[in-house]
Length: 490
Image (cartoon, helix red, strand yellow):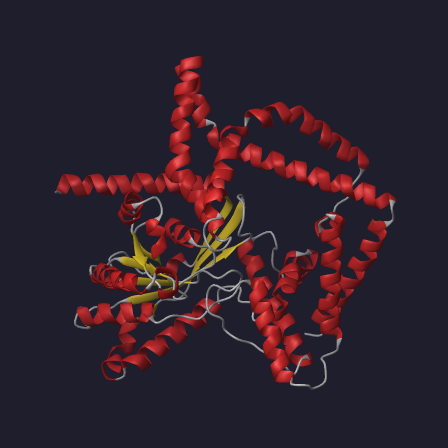
């Protein structure tokens, strides 16, 4: 038994090291972690409650941030049905446990939650770590959805199972992404101040639901204090565009924050969003702020917010003012950029035809290497996305892009490449080719990014001859001046 346990421990550590390498060296450009000092010492029962922004990637971010623990993760149950029962067994072997939901898995599947919760509660009493997402599903954007009662029930059930004699710490956590899609983005993970569950024990014994509500409220408050939670759902797309534009960087610098550091940019974006939302509230007497359930898209929430505000207005005066004019100008400018096939960032660059010519020449010179790098890059990128499209929501792109490559494509394609090269050339080249897979994939990703940038720059110079760029520049200046005016009134 000891040898088996030792083997499992080594297997887990080895597999985690493999995941860490792919996640930190290939998938992400940079991983930020803050608040490690808030994680209780090993052996302390810890229930981590995190916002849910990006499917499996959220759990992986927490896993990489914690080095001295083997957390158990409560994830959506339908993931365990992918690839048959063997895949489900594998997920359980690395600490994942299924949570079933009525709307997704059906009423019959809900009985499986009892086993998941019992295992998790015992893990807590044994001094382990459990990660759960109170929203019970990932959001489609930067907001915090409605909390379900499962995580508070688990915490107090575990405490009751131990006779309320053991302290359980509830640790709020936050995930934040520079982008939800593709690779080479950045991830920020933060752990907040832990909450001793024992402070609610006496209240729970007489008023269990009140204790659960108070705990849920405090956890939500602390997670909101770390993440980007866009309240103004009606203007979600416009706010996202503003914070990602040059204005967002200028605003961050004005607050003494570095926009190139994702953690500091998050702080600035939180302040920026608050300023825009306060301006909207001051100008719009029908403004409606609401907490949504999980599963809604930004477009659906924008329509819901619009309908609620129209109902609140009920024939009253339409809203007018500089904030409404600003958002209208932002939308018109965004539409013009999309129609022209350009990006706002191009206006911040010093573009010259000579520079473009040199870049095109470099692309031509590198084309043979890019052609060679199609294997395995194309398969590793497009095959996972094919399976991701079968799921509900684009946020599964990252899950499949990472999981399918780590679990299937890298090992399989690596072995095929190794034996093919060994047969055709030499053992040494086969091993070297496989070892170069990470560099090959990163090069191919960068090459196609350079191609798309070059195409946009070519379009820029073509539109410049037609006078379109000058019109867009004028519209951009107008939009930026309107935004600065609204922000200047904070």
